[in-house]
Image (cartoon, rainbow over all chains, first blue to last red; front, side, top):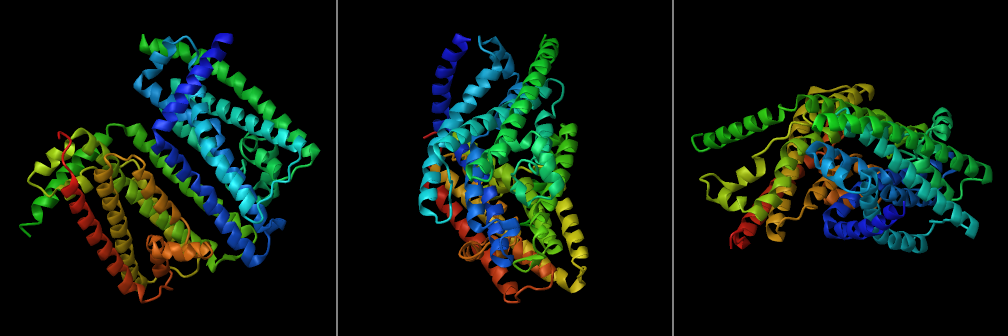
Length: 266
Length: 264
């Protein structure tokens, strides 16, 4: 365990360097982060034309989407593409030879990239919060701690969920496509397509118990102060439960898949 | 005729080679077709959320918006099939010296660099996009009038020409900057902005997108189909497209003049 932690600090340092070297990829993430801003722009038009939908003012939308853009950049799902590429090329075999589990190798590498994204995004977000009228994150000390915990939980849920799908790559070359379908369907219940308050009631209710909201919607709603203490606790409970479910699934699939992988490679 | 035909023959050979190499991965081809359908439905259902609160956004009803979204997939699919596979290789051409070799070939290098490769992974997107556009037209209650087709064809051709101009300009930039991988994301972002009609964004963004000329990619062709195009655009769009292609070609040639070769 201690060895893994030591390895993490080294891997983190190297992956931060890698992230800083390949700035092009950071630009790409920024561009894909553009998408929620398009959705926001349309909501602003709707809100200006026919009044605040479901009571959401334009200030609410701006606060929501600024936070959602941050969460998108901090999510742990990007590991899917690394797993997929390595399984196709066979580089996974090299990673298996190293003394720490590939899961930690991918996670450490991803954390380095997140750190660089955060370094670039956070100043922009803080500036926007100070300068753009209407952006408002009404947070006390206790709320700030809760938000931080929710962001960490969001990272873990998306990381473990994506890793579980990546493991499907032991059985199928279509693992990454499968993940995209899962993510795409989930995006309606995660708060990515639209804030869940604006979704039809049945979808809103389903989203409360599905795993997706924990990855974006829950921390963002917490940030903009839309959740009371009860809703906050429910959100944490659901997120933690799904984290446990996917961790179990991941471990189970990994053991079976690895045996298969050896069979193929051997 | 005798001057043009060798170009077409070369293109034919290049594209046939591309297609047969991509066809080796048949399962990938099928699954990417399934993924295309999925994202199309995703986009159509996604925007319907806006219409839970209003019948029209900036004068666009839901079926009319579908017309634009269908065209977005058509344009984006063509970008991925024709422009992206070539744009993503230019960095490598410059870094590895392949460009030196291309320049010595007895064919116009611009042709080879621009159209050498064809990606068929997303070949369903343009077709499905047109289907969504057709469904949108039918649902909007206007249907397709034959009179709307020629203006639409003109504006659509202008849209594709503009996209080519953008691609070529980015290639010229890649030659000057020596392999800038993020350039591909510029063309992705530009087309992504055309997902919605520009009127859905309020000013000043709307004016910027009209000038930039994002509006020419999907908004204006959709308006032509819906029969509410400002007639002036029938002259402006081809002029803007031709001007852009000419400008991009000039930029490309200038960039080659500054290019000193990878071996130097």
